[in-house]
Amino acid sequence: MRLTVLSGMPDEVLVLDEPEPCPYRPGEMARMPLRLPIRYLTAEETDTHFARGDRRHGRLLYRPACPACAMCEAIRLDVGTFVPNRTQRRTKSRGDRLLRTEVGRPQVDAERLALYEKHKLGRDLVVGEGKALDEKGYFGFLVDRCVDSVELRYYLDDTLVGVAVTDRGGDSLSAVYCFFDPDYPRLSIGTYSILKQIELGRSWGCRYLYLGLYISDNEHMSYKSRFLPHERLVGGDWRLFDRAKAAPAAPESSEPSSVPR
Image (cartoon, rainbow, N blue to C red; front, side):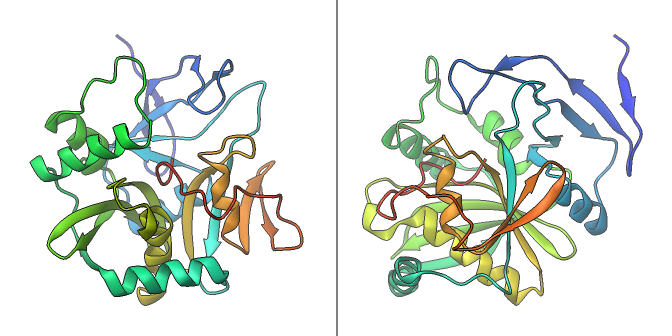
């Protein structure tokens, strides 16, 4: 099989580029070419990919390239100018009182696999036959990578109740995925995790935290517009949305099913 090599910094191998059912908008078709960098990205290269709207799945990079739809918009926060609203401040204060956070390298074990499956079932995220993710699948999704990454672990007493994987560039972070125990809705761990990543970005001198894709008509993706001010990649340009410009978001009481994609 002949592979297509895309020139860049670094060059990339085009792994898959076929239309597929859209994971965000039922009934629509999507195109998200998967690209494999030929080597590990430097911090500066990572920042450039984030700014272009790239997301990561394992060692692969992708961004929507759908010919008939432009609903997916990359979204990011300037961690220096972001101002939490009252509900977010309460969530942060409650989480800081009750949860212990550790930061380390992404890893896979039985505890994480069990929590991942509990989150998937409890948040109604089962797709198709709902086959459980095994250690190899988890490693390929959240541990194997082409950029520098960290794992935030949230503990209630000594029990692991949440995990977030975050990529790190030179002056930016990009939230990859977060899963958490659905038995503790009052903790709003998904929202708390974003707020902790903002805090981490500030402590590391980063400018941006990328939150993945924003889709206004998808309830699992539209929650991101609650974080203001933010910027969204619209028509190839980053556009600022503050409280006066942002579209209505999901109610504050709704917790994101998974954070983010």
